Image 1 (cartoon, one colour):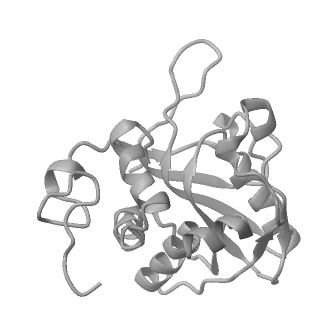
Image 2 (cartoon, one colour):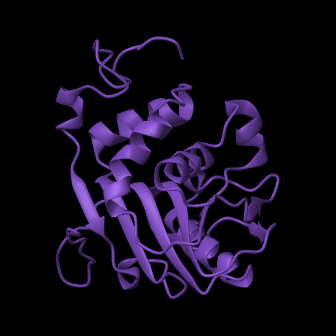
Length: 211
């Protein structure tokens, strides 16, 4: 894009996200794998940059459904502070083939490649997704727990960071981490742009800040 088209959320003059909008987004940080409702045994750690609240949902919709691909680099710049040390490969949770054709890009791949550019970590196309697989957003809570149908495409080694745009139950990251381990990873860390907030209370999970 040859010019600044303004803020993707409020359509202000400074983009892709203006200062006023960026100040409305809540931070998350570390999410313990045991807090994920799907179970997270395959994940050594999980980190999320923003809370998936209403302001962030508006921005994420622009990224995924309104063609605002430039937000991938902005999200990546916000996530670098959570990036772990000594990572061998970056991978991502792929979207469905149908969504890729309709949208023209895979938002999680754009995010992963932007992070790779900023960190210098090699990006690998480790996973593919079955054609006709339903998006997680189209499923109920019970169905989401099963996660997407992912397959191994390439081999990896060592520590792998698996990237996704959003996390609700953690099922997609859990399945992706399992497949990355089958692909040769010895350790898998989840890193997402935004995560659904966890409510505090008896039997509920908490999200704590990562420093």
